Amino acid sequence: MMEWLSFLLSLVPFLEVRFSLPLAAVYNPDLPLPMIFAICVVLNLIAIPLAYLLLDTIVPPIRMRSKLIDKLFRISVKRAKKYQSLSLIGLALFVGIPFPGTGAYSGALIAYIAGFDRKISSLAIAIGVCLASVIMLLATLGILYIQGITGF
Image (tube, rainbow, N blue to C red):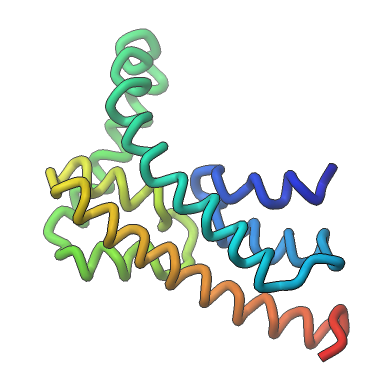
């Protein structure tokens, strides 16, 4: 059960590939690492249209009904406004640096607030997801090697 849950974490905001890739590598030792990498990346890329869908259809009615959600959304907007002046390259780098609070969902929120073209910003976010995934793959390989979990 944990094997597939580790992959599905790629769809969870703020965890995404930063958490799912190392976890999936540990819980799925029988799968080749390139396959684990590909699954995590594809699932994290699915988060881009999912984030826009949530921002367009789900968040507005929930904000009207819940003061807590409205407050959380306003805090997110306030934080995201700091990054409004990012270029699309800056957006890709923001998403690509695997720190807490960066990722596909945060990138989509920034693009949404800044009014970036969705197709172009989605491409920038996708590039950032791929960059973060490569960084996490290298970190995962290093950790697995140091811990002696894999037979390199």
